Structure formats: C-alpha cells, structure tokens
Amino acid sequence: MVEAYQTGRLRLGVNIDHVATLRNARGGAAPDPLRAARLARRAGADGLTAHLREDRRHIRDDDIARLQAEAGLPLNLEMAATPEMQAIALAVRPHAVCLVPENRAELTTEGGLDVRAGLARLKPCIGELAGAGIRVSLFIDPEAAQIEAAAQAGAAVVELHTGTYVEHTDAARAAELARLREGAALAHSLGLEVHAGHGLDYETVAAVAAIAPVVELNIGHFLIGEAVFVGLEAAIRQMRALMDEGRALV
Image (cartoon, rainbow, N blue to C red; front, side, top):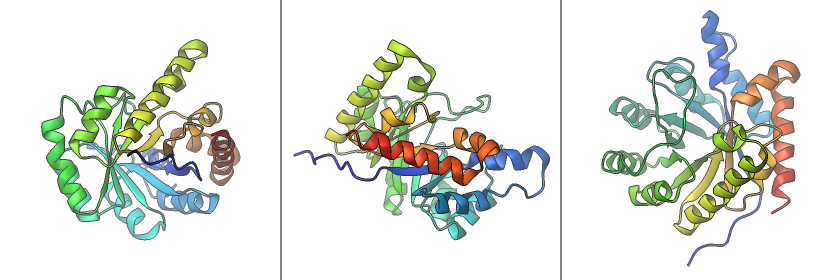
C-alpha cells in the first residue's frame, strides 16, 4: 500500500556552489561558502547542497569538510558516481549524496542521469553509500523508465530535473509541469522520496511546490545571483515564502 502524501512544510536545500565560483574567480578566501551556509540557515533553509566536481571548479574538498563539520545543516553532496567521489563521500559521511551526470565541458549539469543504461554500475555504488548510512538520491529527468530504474537501483530518493520546465514557456511549460507531476506520482508509488530542482526561480517555484509528492526543492544559482542585489538572507526568505504559498495550494 502506498503511503499518503505528506503535504506539510516543503524542505528547501540551498546550493552554495556559486559562492565558491566567485571566490575561485579571483583566488583567496572570500566570499566564504561556510559563511553563506550560516546565512542560509538563519534565513530558513533546511539543508545545504554542494557539488564537488572532478575539476573542482567551485566547491573544493576543504569546503566539503568545513560544511559537514561546521555549517549546522544537513549536507547533500552532489557528485558523479566515480571511485574518487565515492571514496570522498564515505570518508566525509554527509547526510545525503545525490548522484548526477558530469561532463567537463558543461557549464552546469545538463539533464538527468541515465540510470537505466548505467544500472549495473550505479547499483553497487548506491549500495555501498547506503550501507554507510548515507541517503542516496539520483538526479533524473521525469521519465517513467528512469524512475523505475532508480527504484531498481536501490536509491531512496529521486530528484526530478526541473530545468526543462523552467526553460519553456506557455503551453510547453504546462506540458513539462504535467510531466513532473506524473513522474512525482510514479516515484512516490514506487516508495521513493521525491525531490525536485534545477533552474527554479521566483516565477517558477510555486507550481513545483504545489506538486504533492515533492518534499524537498534544491535551489542555488538563482539565489546566489539574486543575493547580489538584495542579500542572501533576503533572497532565501523570499524563495521560502513563495514555496510556502505554492505548498498551500496542495
């Protein structure tokens, strides 16, 4: 029997990668991702997300260690399913790991992980991480075949890729939102916890927040950009308010 949807407070995970991007553009220690993490906590974030890439273009290993030890919020470590990253996750023991596709040439993550094609490779990685007490999620497109493969792989969570929904407008956006709703319902029916994220902003967040099976949104780039104009706490508080308005429609 499928559990009823839990439609209470929707969690917000704040991705602080691009605080580190700014720091690395010039070198030195400022702006400090740990300071951003503490501001996010004060503004009402429920968790932190950070993507440790192979090329260390923004978040670095020492950032992950400090965030895990000092930020005071659960850490969701985004990473590729490689032996190097798996070893780091097992050493750091973050609250969660989100496995994502990674391409050196990309500006940001482009599309979801192909779990169906990579099932044989992903399943042992997921098993080892989960065996160490780490919650494992898979960043995927809202496609039935990928959601079903995620369940077969042993993941606890799927994070549905919202980037295509954000990029479209009008009828195409409505169709993509329907696809997200259908994907979330399927994932929930398979016993998966459902998260969503990628590209969400003030205009697009409420509709995703209103998808009943979704229990967490992970948002980063827009918040860091908006912080340039209004400050990070104000940007997060506004996003939190819009999420709560959307959730009230469920």
